[in-house]
Length: 292
Length: 338
Image (cartoon, rainbow over all chains, first blue to last red; front, side):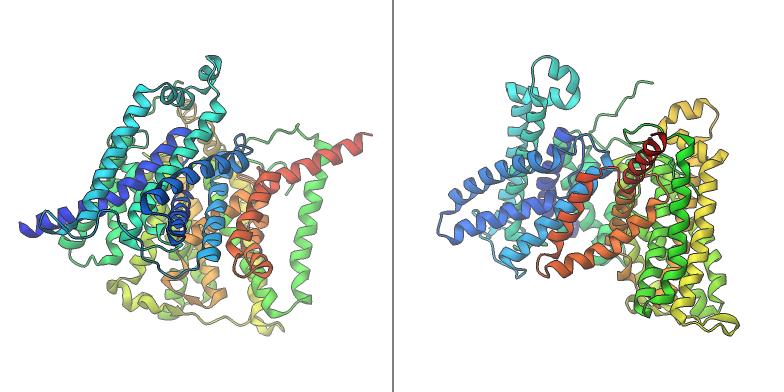
């Protein structure tokens, strides 16, 4: 039983990483209706920016804040320059665009900061949390920040004018335009916010997985899986999905014989597909109703 | 083999082409075919090998085109079917000692069955959810091939070495050249069969499902059957391509069939034009040669150069090579009118 509790705790700790990433994925999905395959690379780039700022002697929290602002405007710039012209192109062409962005960001980061692994500091320290060996204060802090972000997003979308406008632009663009919402800029704003949330995710993840241009590869796959599991239309679902994927992955690795580190991912994915076959819209997602 | 009739998805925003202009499509097809037949006589073996790979990837892109362009289902798992085909051929050749040409239909049939079975759970999923499910398949495949349980057959992480066949009947050509013509013959056969498939009753059923599933089922199309069938056919063709690939590369190993391959095939389809079968070869050329060109322009930034080139292509022609063909045809039509 103790093994079980420990594995669940460890799962929650890694799940926090996935939850953070899944939140960014859902955020952009809400705004543009696509999964952004380059999300992880954008987050990695933001993390490198904050690292570079710290190397120049700027204190942690200032670097954090500056990186968020740069990411926010960077996200908007990417949307304006690269994806707005593609708005009318077929969906699959857009997906190819994300893959191209992925290749560009990864390669540029590799050129500027090279591929050696770098240490990244944590603001929470890494001593054991509440006497438990399995969760460090950093991981506890990460869970706290993820939940805080979730609450903040909930308030933003439910109770502010601009949050309401963004939701309107995403769900009924035509009608939203009729009541005077600039839907095109709402999409850009969605990109900016997703990019900033990605930056937070990256900065929180970096102390755990270390900083290097390919650090997000694995994390993004789990983030997607978590977002789809929880339901792509629900930020709460995404966070829940993240924790669930983390726990599943750990339990499968512990209890199913013959499952080493290599088979963890396929098993987690298989489980997710099973859930999807039963509940196609994800755990907390709204089923899409089509009019015929 | 005229270009316009193979178009299976909605045309980009250009006017319908008058019947007379269709000779352009036929003419182009014949020129391309002639070039493919004659070219190997004048180039080195390594380039012949690259051309063989071009044809093999074109087949795999064609298979994805039937699935996505034809029946409207999205797949990121093509590398898994390709791997199964490659391993089937390799195991039959090396462990059973079967003739290489005979292994290909078997690879095709096994992959067809695999795709058909995989299509069953995929029936309930669509869009991003289907993308994730097929993606999971692609991620799992290399790990499954490495399992100790299959190691006796698959050779585990090390993989299997495949012997390259000689030209039969004492024909005076190199192994590479023979394999090229062999691949070309199979490729043309599958291409003609695919074009006919999409024009047939089954092909129309695929397209009806793609355009409106509910309307299709109201018209009496068995949606579940045709969706899984599309997966099966696509997997089968990919399997044959995989088998050919194993023979051409002379080697199979789990790490040759990762998700990167599936993403490449997807890019090939987009660049060639979704749903336009002749575009498959253009897409295949893009995924084979552009990474090399990018590497040539800048070693350190090859990824960035590749991304920029890809962006250029999708900015200029969002509908891929098909859009180019459409515009060319339209211009020729206008010239004839004047």
